[in-house]
Amino acid sequence: MHEILEAATELAGDAVALRRDIHRHPELGLHNPDTQQRIIAALDGLPLEITEGTGITSVVADLEGAADGPTVLLRADTDALPMTEDSDEDYCSTLPDRAHACGHDAHVAMLVGAARLLCDRRDEISGRVRFMFQPGEEGAGGAAVMIDEGVLDGVDRAFAIHITPNLPVGHAACRPGPLLASADTFHVTVTGRGGHASTPHLCADPVPPMAEMISTAQTVVTRQIDAFKPSVVTITHVDAGTTTNVIPETAFFEGTIRAVSEETRSLVSDGLRTACRRIAEAHGCSADFRLEAGYPVTVNDADQAALVASTCENTLGPGSYLELPAPFMGAEDFSYVLNKVPGAMAFLGVCPDDITDSLAAPPCHSNRMRLNEAGLVHGIALHTAMVLGT
Image (tube, rainbow, N blue to C red):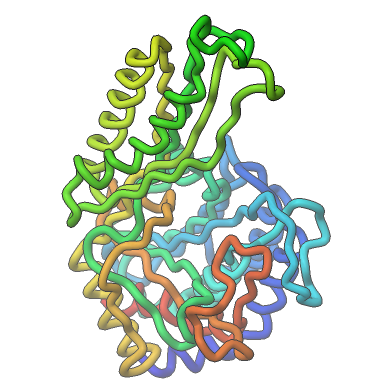
């Protein structure tokens, strides 16, 4: 497999150029028309059947192999984050409040490179390769939309890469089973009776029950959930009142629930809903608990995770593969794909050269996040080998 890495190295310049072009022009959500056109232009001239999304600005490109066989899906996400970039790179975002701080620009560049490499090796492919370029990963659920549009029709297995600055270049990491958490949000409005701050006995103050609910949220996790089936509940926004001498009518708070099993996911949300309702009643108030289901748990198929491990060792070199001891509490909408077909997602190391400890590197979603573009070659090679190595 070493020739795959060598061939990928020859595409490094084009991959870097495409990544930087997309990085300068980030787009948000499900509508990434400029990125879509850059992808189509980069694939121009290749023996691919290209389909543009109807509901979103996706791109699906099919490569027919020389013989019958399975259909393998390779995926890259295309959208950016609504945030300001402070990385000081020469090719920083040119648009305010938009930045590729999660590496999706690199994902696109690596998958385009893999498409070129696999087209060159078309005679070695048995089956079909489907390249899935998906907008709307950062909360908009673009994968689910593309599934509804048929992107998984006929697909036998799937693979995706997510870069991370917190692994050294030349390494990839994966694990069988849960890789990333589910991500649900909850929104609680506590309603009481407002009045003068000097006479709380004539009111039903919603602030004390809100404070109790926030504390109890952590107790739900530590006292109702098995410690070996972890969950995280984080309160991220609290709002009540307008001034110092008025007891407000309502108080509001919201946050996120993360879990690495569907059982825990349900237990936590049900526990929070019950706790909020009963605490409110004890204070003479009412509580409206609203749950918004987000991405499900990202679960790697055991056989496909094993394939990632062997492919990585054969392609990137001995010692390049790291098996993760536990899932991360981030979330991914590639989970929708893995709920439908066997597959795996792997993390690819892109720690910048000037940072000696990869764990100290600004992570994805940081305003200072940077990546080592030397890692793009490894991503191109790994995508390619996951198709050819079967």
